Image (cartoon, rainbow, N blue to C red; front, side):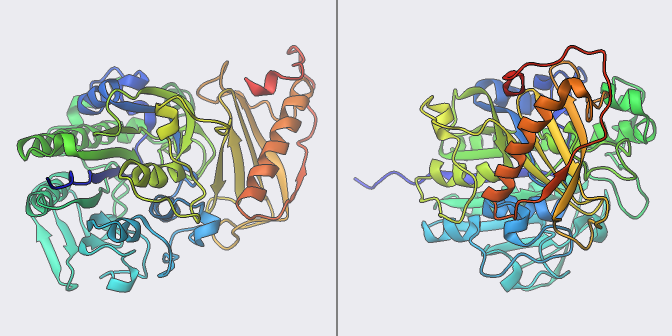
Length: 449
């Protein structure tokens, strides 16, 4: 009797999608019913975060299971090293056929030549899909570096291509990554182009509290952004339906996640590149044979944990080069020493570092460094401290408060440890100027909540 086929693996990867667009995170607009259903029936990573809130670096983290300073892709425009150990190479070594469709952002430009494709065999991609396409004009390049124009709204064009790939490769185990550009803004005109008729559904509707409080560009872009999210979820549903019709639904592990969030110019002059939840936290759910009935996982998980998770779920070895760890022990309730914080690196807008525990967010930055030319610094200054229990939308910065000095000191030690773990030299961290506060002084141990 032949051995059972290894489970297929698909990554459904969106761009710049906030975590709180999903109903399971409290959004009342019914934008993501397919995601919500999977999150409730399979495995929902309730607290999932990007380790680098900008396109290229985040993608390098997901391809390798490493942090951006480890991959060398710590800002946009730096190609992934050709000898990097990637998901595609690991799956190919394990007997899988591999395919990539969509935005890449890890090469020198278009077309992406074979050595810079991260080991993927089938290729239909673009270095920067936002630059080479528009909402109803999708152009990518194939294996022979020939341009391919696809019909339909851009989300649908990529989804159609993915379904064709799945149908053509259903007889053998496959690993496929679909990398959408939505709901990222259209760079050429700084707009969020939704499908025709979708923007009007959501303009002026419910808006997250941080955007209401801080302004930014959400009043202008919210309807289009929501419309793009809605169409992405419809595409996700179509993909799952295609797997079901091909009798692959129970044989395929599917990951839904995003590279980073969007703060709509509230935290700095653009849309991401900050330590805030709106930049770092992403909607993430898994379904398939390894993830059915996993439930809501509230431990803190990073994108660097997802590559080892997918390999582990496929029964393949996890390379020692990966800094992340598989979440399967969390599902099996056998995890030991799971990190109590996530670590993120900020570039381009600034040189920054942060840790986030279940209760606290602590961020430092290097004011004398440029995030576009410096990957790190020997000296940082405290910039933000948030109590997420009392202030989930990070509207009250507690950095420098004398009542919270003990918490900041404890988090500083965690940050230094995490920086050392990924190969960074221990920097000097300068305290923020002290601020007197009428708040109750926190006691030792409060920083662990």
